[in-house]
Length: 183
Image (cartoon, rainbow, N blue to C red; front, side, top):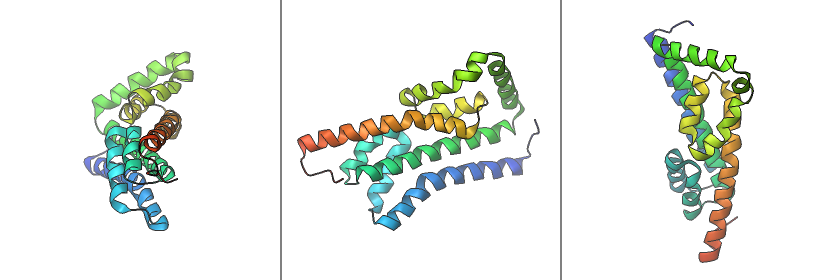
């Protein structure tokens, strides 16, 4: 593996952060401009999404955002977090030899086990539901799985959890506060 110098390392860290922030903040902000959603509740939803992931859906709905918009914003936030973290870990792996050695050893371990190589990535689905994206991105990187394939499996766990949370929130809010939720 070729190691990067500090300048290249910082450039890759900046690109990873920019990519993550562009997806997490940029796409929802473009949607705000196009469809006229309120800015502050959307930023509150994005901020909550960084901390409580799909548990932030009730926050957005309670702030008066439509469930479909909440779904879109949290999907963007989750994707931005995953891609940003994966890029940061990749930059660290290309800069620091002990981390590169760890990556090489784990990749060899996964390649030795046909079961882990073939079906291991599927474990990202329950991992996303139980632990979240902050575990999925590092695990995907350490085990050497392709970035976008790992993102797809992460989203396969995130999207049903988010949809169930939104549907439960809508049902509870309509039960206790009729007329609060707008489709």
